[in-house]
Length: 377
Ligand code: MRU
Image (cartoon, rainbow, N blue to C red):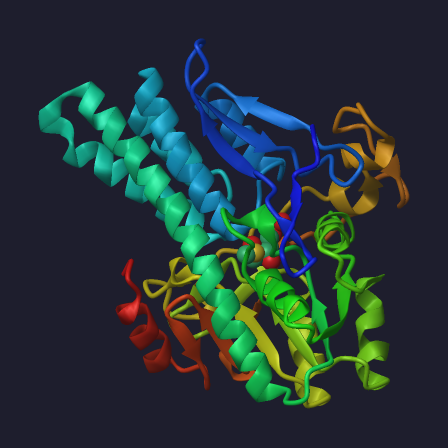
């Protein structure tokens, strides 16, 4: 695969990674994904010709991150419709592939609703409607990403006058999770372009290393000054006064403002509060789930223990390796606790930045209001 980055006028590389695209080769339409399990060692594409392949890619995190899961889910429904598979079955399988990121169900539901609404026109019209809706979900995410970057940059300016920000982030929230430049990382990138980012602290994000593998990959390609740290080292960074703000994304935000994001986010919020550092969540309104009343109602995905007790990512075993043959790092039979996400209560969140504006302080009413003003609500 060729170089997928362009150098912008500002002399800063812009991320143009096609993390997901729809293609229509003569053999039939496909969803093409950049296989994120292989980054940063290899840039390998996965071509999904059917829904089970896409579901498998979602489960194995070849495609991941809340906004991109929404886009993938919508194209998955379109794939089923255009190729003449059972759409109801596809909707069910896609929506249940992972439980926490609300965007997945959101994308699936939107494409499915368009498909159903076009029923009077027959199967071709239904397939066209599902595909058009998937393209709309994709385009809206690109626009939302740009708006979040603008709002987030302005907020950083207010919270941290003087620039020279040292920002800590967790997991991966850049172009790899979005049609655009992402959520939290898009804000960091905007600060970088504005000459205001002094350092991006990148939590490695155990156990699947989305920070070390993916955020560092994006930071390097965009020319940010970045440093990867073990998740457990964040405390000493705060204690040393080295963190000016925490910026993270979200997988689901409940109506009470509780934020589910990659496991390890909640400890950062506690650290940030103790050290009087702003803790900012950046997410599109499609990540806000007003039907989930409270943080404790959010279903947190539990992943296989082997992800903790073994190093088993393809990237760790070198180019071309297959998944599933891990190197043990704990005694045989060791039990593991491996929740993929944790939930941060609203009271620890300084602000939630959406494409429709910033919610701060984070309140149930403030969140509902910003969602009601969203163009896509
Ligand atoms: O398990 P993952 O890699 O899909 O988890 C992703 C995250 O937790 C991201 O931080 C989240 O989706 C927000 S990115 C916009």
